[in-house]
Image (cartoon, rainbow, N blue to C red; front, side, top):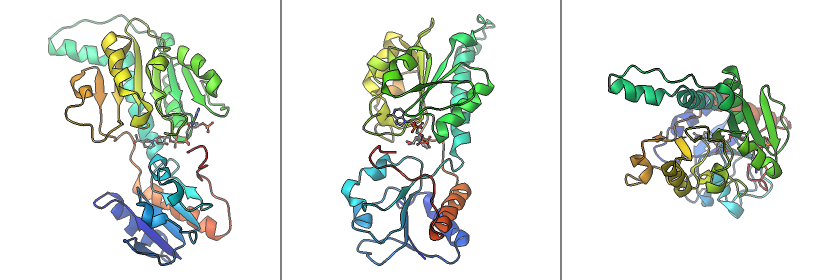
Length: 313
Ligand code: NDP
């Protein structure tokens, strides 16, 4: 069995490829180089160049070494038609996402940023007890990662809303399904968590119009974006924070990464910035997952995690 690999030079993924050698000892593994048209059975890729995959109808599957496929789908017709594109499902990321989002929600709910500011002034001043019933969290996307975030927040008894394309039955989550339910979902939520795939249907969804529909309480609404920068209209968010309609935002992803040093987000103290670290694919989990799927495909079985190219996720 021949595995053809591509990862961006210098990326952490390079060590993974060695681990595939241990997980699939029978495999002949090589890195793709310009002009390599030799046969292969499977491709393992992260952000591959179009030339690697163009016309490669010999592949039995392409494995994307991450959960999001927005980057690889940009290759368009260069992706061989009919060859299954398989993404990582969880791969150790769900628990990280749940930790990141829970930390942000608990921080806003408990007003720890205000207590930190008070402490810096040596000020001992308990604030009125917050009302959890008025602090509903709305999760855009209830897939592998969104449902794990919901489970973590349910543990802390936050009222939860979740938006998806197909109905879900998750403990403690009021489910809103499809475009027609988006307005009601937003109007029922105070904290908006975005964990959608970036597709034609979801690009720019966190915009002025939609943010304004959120419940504001006394301080304003909150945003936590751990999906892709393209979901947020950055100028809209900044303006709404400055107008006081959005109290604060925690952002892990941005339209342009790294975030430019002169980006206005850096200067806005109500925006917390992390450098796309809310969930990192875990080497061992992902190598095991992909190796298992390759073995299943070799036995003629159906695997999960295949992308529907028409919906973009
Ligand atoms: P899934 O495919 O499992 O879940 C996607 C969810 O979004 C599903 O519930 C789906 O609905 C919903 N959805 C998609 N399109 C729409 C739409 N148009 N309207 C309503 N709901 C929609 O993906 P994951 O949970 O594994 O990952 C989500 C995204 O998180 C990835 O695509 C990636 O971009 C991002 N990510 C970010 C990371 C980071 O480090 N910041 C790390 C990993 C992933 P339904 O269930 O009905 O299909």
